[in-house]
Length: 117
Image (cartoon, rainbow, N blue to C red; front, side, top):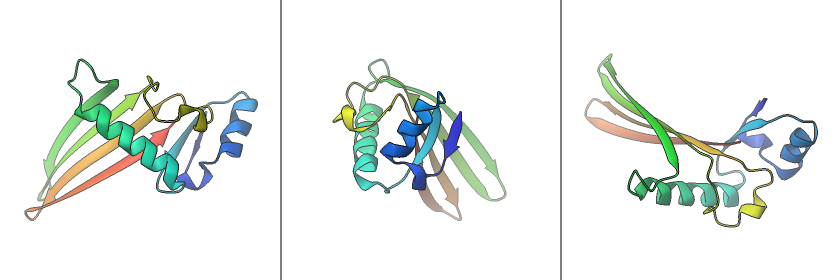
């Protein structure tokens, strides 16, 4: 298993990993922007579906301490038929995301981190 940062999220890199017989988990940011937009759009649509129709498997934790409240939801999807233009995602077998909502001093901050596998 190879894990890489978003800067290595390129077709040639993923193809070389797969040719070598390994699997991969690679962070996806807005580099490359097209893949990020496709994944984010698909994830937003999937998250809006009723739970029994959603391809997402998720787990949520809530923590309070040090003056802040934080909720984190991690999800993964391995059913990717609905991802627009799936042929462009070389070897794309799964998507993952960690979403966090943090409340500190009355202000809420939201964050999403995507991975592809």
